[in-house]
Image: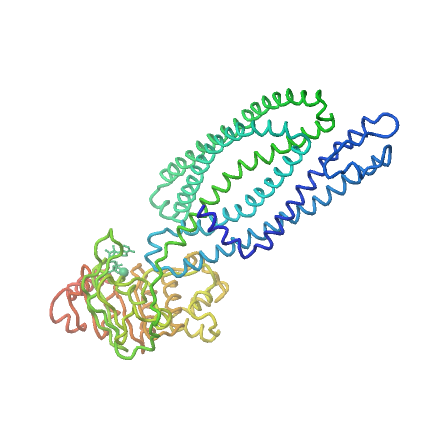
Length: 600
Ligand SMILES: Nc1ncnc2c1ncn2[C@@H]1O[C@H](COP(=O)(O)OP(=O)(O)OP(=O)(O)O)[C@@H](O)[C@H]1O
Ligand SMILES: [Mg+2]
């Protein structure tokens, strides 16, 4: 009920359209009854012996519109039939279309609300929910809600008004028989409900199965190179087959039930009709009902069977839609938005220093702590480098600065302002980031470079690309700056992707630069280019750089060595070599490797 109310909230702004659609549906039902009521005069005319035909009472006193007899009477009946049908068609069109307007507008609102919600969530949110899951909420679940509004709600109103109209008409012609039939209805209703509950459970099962199938296939297809390299095709095939079989079983069970339900329900229904006929005979003999009235009564009674059946099914559809809606609410209600204080401080350009003060961090409650009590100063205009073993927490340090995450303990200060008191937008405006994994969008080179500054001029783009040593290779691409880079930049080499990412950071020209050097193996030439690009980028900025090649950071103002979430040494290249600690070890290790490589 709560879900329904929440869903209705989306319809509220469109209540006028909704009301018009409902009105049109009522018109449809009335016209449908009127069409049915014409059966009576048709009978009167058909059985008219010479002279004037009988004028049996029918709905809306339609009998009075019809001339006494002969051609004129038939012509009027035909005209009424055509007029009613055309008017009904028009009303039907409007009711369906207006309902679609309501449904589509609500789903648009919901989708936008959900997407806006997703865009402001911090990184931890996206670790909790897989991207596929979120996208399916956005597309499938939202579409299911649309289905609920446009189709289910429309049909509910339509069948509801039709049912009321038909039953009233039946009641009008013979209330005793109508009441008797209505007593029989719940039995059929119960039977239908039983079938549909079973069907619903199965459809839920196959919905879940389909989701699993999507995930399984997507993963294998997206990672097809690894699948091929490890010759995992049979394993993936098997995995897919298992999930597909599960869906097949659920679908077949559903098909069995679906096939069984109409004959069973129909048989039970016919038994009731037989009982009804018995009572009807009595009514006719006792002259409480005319023959043509009996026929039209039966017509209305049978006509109300269809809306009744549909209504019982619609209940399920509505349940399904509400389940889909609940999925969307779940995501909408999971709000981990980075808290931004009311009187957040707008950060200006860095004047003095950024300071990590006793920072501890853990990704989630289940995992082990990643940073322990780390303190680090980054003076304005200087270059500070983080080095150390893999998994030591270097990338994590950089993720805290733009507040992708907040420290669990301690704080990070920007010229003495705690980042958590700062205006998030102004903070991120001040920082340019090159991440360890190069992230590109499936669009043109130009789009990717200008991602942080969409209104950049061609000259600005070109000079950023030149600084990043990307211009030359871009010019060699088939469409130059307008070449599409493919999903995640798949059409480019690793080094080219990195240089595009660097160009993107150059273009935003932020005073603070966070640079997480990629570890992916590059050949010496492209590595040299990336290095040169980085050197260009670092000039005149405050830089926090993570270097895996120690040669990059030899000139850094400060080098901090990280191990297991702690900073164990700080100093310059020379001073760190002098103390013969971890840094020297790392340095010699790398130096020896390089010697080895060059001697080969
Ligand atoms: N999103 C995450 N969720 C949970 N744990 C994470 C996440 N990202 C990193 N970790 C863990 O945090 C620790 C530090 O990771 P981090 O990426 O900061 O290391 P790093 O020093 O950058 O390593 P590398 O040199 O290999 O890039 C690792 O043990 C890693 O398993
Ligand atoms: Mg890293």
